[in-house]
Amino acid sequence: HVQLVESGGGSVRAGGSVRLSCEASGNAYTTNLMAWFRQAPGKEREGVGIIGGGGITAYVEPVKGRFTISKNNAKNTLYLQMNSLKPEDTAMYYCATGSVRWTQRWEQNAYRYWGQGTQVTVS
Image (cartoon, rainbow, N blue to C red; front, side):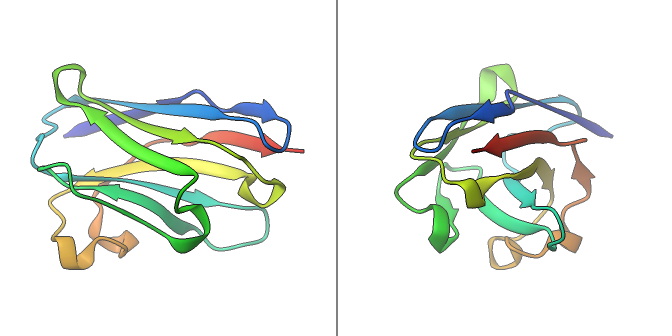
């Protein structure tokens, strides 16, 4: 079993930056994909960024060039550096992991473990 705990959310002005963290405990395998998803008010949850065991990354188009996903395997921690934030980035941000194939990386049902989420509000 894996536990995920996000932190780092808050309120920020448009154009500002925030770094989210997601600490994993339990049987978290460094080779598993780890991902950030977000859910804005009144909208469905959507993918943001993915990082594979070897460090390969993928992002959705709206955040490319602004967000960077990374991880520290020694600390079992996933990060999401968010720069040049826009009001449309306002959402609850969730981290997720599991034995997910790269071809399934955007399929939320493929991720077994989820954090509780951390709110980011951009005004």
